[in-house]
Amino acid sequence: MEIDSGERLRFPDQARAGHIADAVSSDVVSGEPVWIILDVEGTVVPTEYVHATLFDHARAGLAGWITRNLDTPAGRDALAAVRRAAGLADSAGPDEIMTVLLAWIDQDRKEPALKVLQGHVWQEGYASGELRTPLFPDVIRALRRWRAAGHRLGIFSSGSVAAQRAVLSRTDAGDLRDHFAVHFDPLGVGAKREPDAYRAMRARLTPAGRAGDGGADGAPPPVFLSDVPAELDAAVAAGWRAVGVARPGEPYGNADFGPHQVVRGFDDIDGVRR
Image 1 (tube, rainbow, N blue to C red):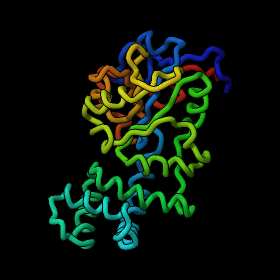
Image 2: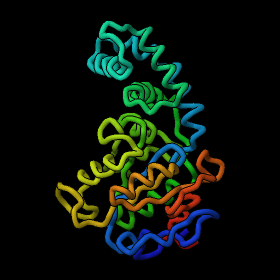
Image 3: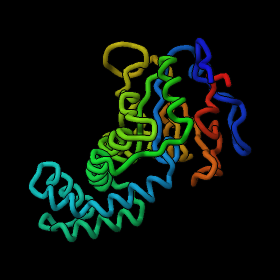
């Protein structure tokens, strides 16, 4: 596989049957570097790993982590957040909190208080070597070629920032944390299906390829890649470019992506000659 010299971020006119938009417009395909922000579950990492391995690991490890951290700042903050989110009394103890947490896991709730606690448990699991993240095979190729082309990469996931960094710390392609310049989660910017979250992120993104701090005014719109159509809707409503990732066998692999450009995987995002 050879990287195209002068590579640009380009998207195919065809990717799958269904609702597919025209090619993404010229402000994205220009040679100027852009921010590429990635979802994780179903986009970078198989959904089955998240639900069957990570969620089960957190379920098994939450009670122990809480017990060990009752008197630590991280533990006190995490438990207080659960009490607030669940409407529990300030006196609610670990047993009541665990009942709430297990119910949230069963419901696949994207509750930030749960995500923070899961992140703590996963950090320990990755640090001990018990956990190792499987990636879709095209992920590392894409990360390397996008960075080589000058694009800057970030993550926006329902998992906490700590959880994101843990998941990337030990993968079947090694430690990927250095590939990503920024991380966002709903606790920091808002829900993934709300346009305001994408407006908040864009305000924090230094224009790709430029030095200094500040927002992205005048820069090409960031690009968001996700397997969830509603998240793409929110990104576009906030002025982003968005691309659906409909990976075969994933829960959203046959979803209706409406007007959005859709690819089957990162190799369908052009710039590579086979």
